Amino acid sequence: MSDVNPPEPPAYTPPAYTPPPAQPAYQALPQAYQQPVYGQQPYYAPAPPTNTLAIVSLILSLVGVGLGGIITGHIARKQIRERGEGGAGMALAGLIIGYIYTAIVVLYLLVVLLFVVIAGVGAAAAYSS
Image (cartoon, rainbow, N blue to C red):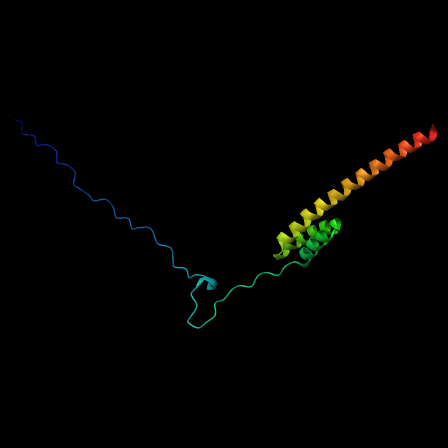
């Protein structure tokens, strides 16, 4: 045997301690979601006001003034986006109904014009014979 001692193993060092990640701070619920105190009425935020032109657009479209419904509907949608008012659904409904009504009127006028032209050509051909 030899006189050489085997090397000693390295000393054990435990892994470094890492603390757990920080928990987010407690945030209170908004006033509308908190439980009311006994006897206190709950608080509800008021709804935004409805845009007047949205109402006008829907009414004009429903009574048959399609072009007025289209114009006021576009103005109402712009105002609703800028001011944060309510009534976007009414303005959109006024636009859709107004466009449909206007398309029906235009098609009707084209058909009537076509019949007038055909009748005029037929009358002119009968008159010239």
